[in-house]
Length: 225
Image 1: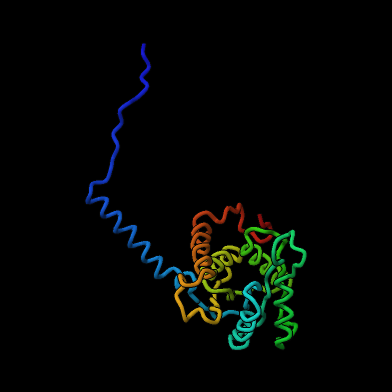
Image 2: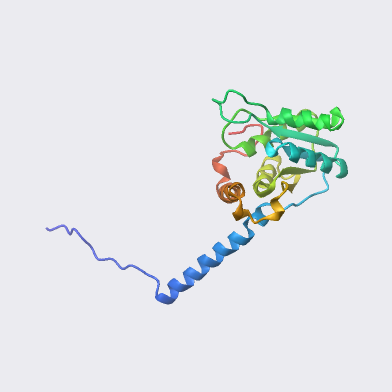
């Protein structure tokens, strides 16, 4: 009995018309992403909330803007969330949550309204770690908000809101405020290498979080994975 080395199979290929349709669809989706990616990722959706959570990495100017939001937004407390800067092998590192807290106090927010939420020292899933740290810090104060707003930077907003909503659970509504650094409105995102890098990374990060939960096995802030 001879064993065949090759077998004939039927392969489906698009016709010229089908290929043209695929090109139009892919090109249309690409063009839509090119034009709308940053506005979509940076959309502000502010809620009436008791708590304002600030992601401390957004820099000093962003913290100042967050303080203005706190003063005018009717919040009860402001949370400075973050972890260590840089990489483990860097000689000089500082804590974003501490820097944010100190700046908020210098800007004369009463100490009893400022909550510091320091993350675990992890190099991955930093947004999740900030959300979990904020949740734990509020729980420690006996604060169980019905709504919070997350103050973050531009195209990170969409992903931050999704992560915080998972961590805080269905009992807490989560809004988001996308702070746009000075100069962002004067040019398109693709004219800035920094913004282009952010948009590309946040597009991938948002889809990864939406579809695959960033690879985490648990959303529980009490048992972060």
